[in-house]
Image 1 (cartoon, protein in one colour):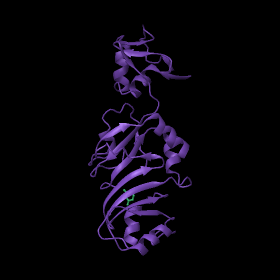
Image 2: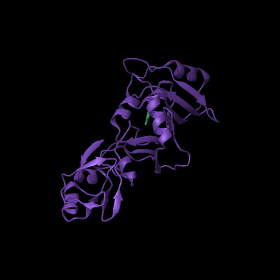
Image 3: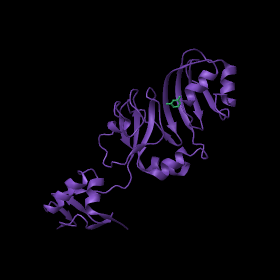
Image 4: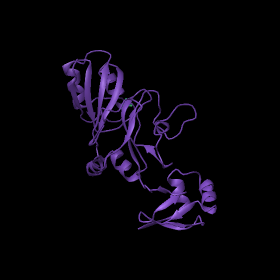
Length: 237
Ligand code: URA
């Protein structure tokens, strides 16, 4: 069982800043297992103790996991002084230590996992684990069969090494493809198509490892991951 200071417990769960929640506690607004506790340093047994503010129960969550359909125009960062970030879109977040797992370019849409589970994020992003990422790509012009084969074998994108083998599947038209890569280099998809003399005009990530973008989510929408989705990611990573 984990023990957490009462003021940290409440601040972690988005109930206010550390000093705000300390005031609530000292005023007698907070109870643990039905008994008023006025000391912010009181150690809560997590998850068995029941903590309430003015009779409203506050459940502790060590980790939060959200699937976001990132809209174009947002940056994949925790904070930015000029641009809206992907974290600004997660309105129901409790924890302040959430971050996006990996980056999508500002103009890229699609699947982004947002969590504070550092170990899972590390595994999903580790170059050694080769977690599959699939993107839908709208190209400027049709992709030829031999260019598709080149991309599948690996192309020189100006780095030390060519890209690892990828999988490319045509969508309905020859200028629309699904591509699966197992790396995460900077602007990788755009650079790969540039290497075969084409250009990405629209890019959307549709899956990462076992996690698939929920088609019901419009750009800018998000939802909490299911237990099965979290387990699936852990197994995959
Ligand atoms: N590759 C890119 O070029 N951009 C992204 O956002 C993701 C992969």
